Image 1 (cartoon, rainbow, N blue to C red):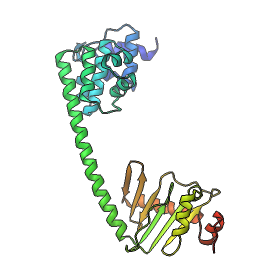
Image 2: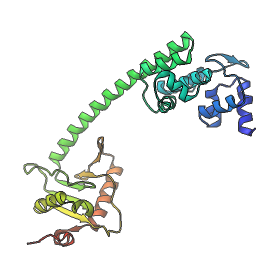
Image 3: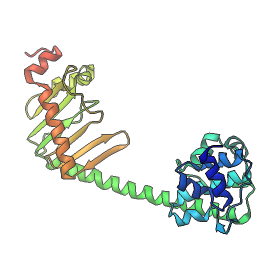
Image 4: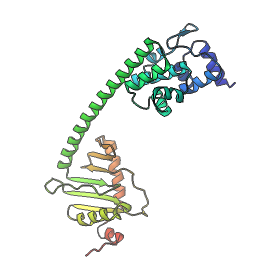
Length: 290
């Protein structure tokens, strides 16, 4: 028996809960449960007492866990008390072992119906079942409120970016994956500087957009394969050196913090210095300059 295993079994026998032991040791609840089960220790029920110390799920409240973490810990404790593996628990509840694990580790938002099937499979007391379902409903409500806030925030951010783009006089764009949409002619924009990696520029469709758009207030630059510094994986645009809009698959991130904006401006300027512009760009790409 290792010192860790000895410590876990001794402290559990003195009344420490599984959750309290995870806090003390930094190990997962699953690891603690495995030690106890391997040692033949009888798992206490939720809320039972041992050695004069209240054990079980009461510790979650004292540690100020979120409702989602609280529910995840409760589900793991219920399964451990039922002495079921994740696979068996999943089979009883009609879900995969992976989903059981994700619910117990708070990696996904639980549905009330999922929690109901799990606790019924664990054959917990009515009090514990009621508590688990109440937590599941609270988590679901918190998630609905969070999504509503995100949607409102996204709408406000889009409007903010649209206004800033229309008012911007100088726009700097690092186009990591594709040539972006360019400002309309009737905007206040005086100049647009776009840096594109050579790999993007050599895509026929993207290269054609560069050839037809380069010139006037729009200046393209191509960052050669042999450039001294690799480009960023994510594209962004800088509006008048006051706002940065970072493009992600799930949407856009708006940055207005001065230090963060300055770091993006500095990065763009380095990329622009390395890029080939004007005739040098056309020669690099083998385009007809006539």
